[in-house]
Image (cartoon, rainbow over all chains, first blue to last red; front, side, top):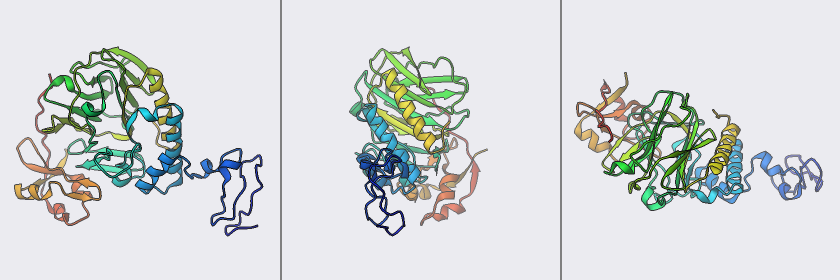
Length: 297
Length: 70
């Protein structure tokens, strides 16, 4: 029987994957469960519950963006990375409202680690970009309440190749060995991961338009993965800041804000420690996500 | 040279904790001369009752000198 948009009833379990269309209003029917190709994935209808919660919270209606989020969440779950994340910021949708939500817990509260954007941000379908002068975002997530020594990770995806002495994320207490911040790109890098002893990426990055993940699975080494190329650096851990991590700048002892950052960011996460293999898996999921959205670097 | 909007102390107090667009808050900061300033992004995107910021005098931004971390 033909439905209102003329697709009609598909035949059940056919080989091209259109499946059995029900006589519903839009006529797409329950295709995913009965077809071979999984039509719901193709047309952008979300099938993961967590992805759908995020899409509902943000109000994202673009089907490509919906599908990218759905695939990202499923991929992180497949790779057993989902449960290692405290916060995931996909920066999709082009507005402060769509970009503020934490994919892991998309509620509009500080406890849900929804971002509070402050100062001069620019929002677009390519991500979020601070002005390097006044822009930061509070995650309301402090290392001391979520990390343990030897077990933490953080990442960001920069779309900008530029000179910038700021940090994409940061926090510290009055003690210098609690620093979580970095500067990198264009032939230099200094990465502080709960320490006052920075390490330098090798080889030195020649661009800052890249994904950088760094992680601790013990207190004597840090793993860093630049576009999925992971290496381990000897680097002792100090202490965990008890002040919330800011994106786009560093929260300096909850007294001041410094190291403002001006590159466009298209992804960030905060989580438990990841192994080198997990860093590579995460990068691959992030890059697939960015490619789907047409904003990969 | 980066341009910023110059605020009085009173204007700074009025903007703290307020949104200039949905889900984004003003962040008045002090420059190297202890002037209170906001960025041109905050001025340009302001679309609410604080639109008076669009009339602010623009000055060249001079960042505060940062103390090196050791």
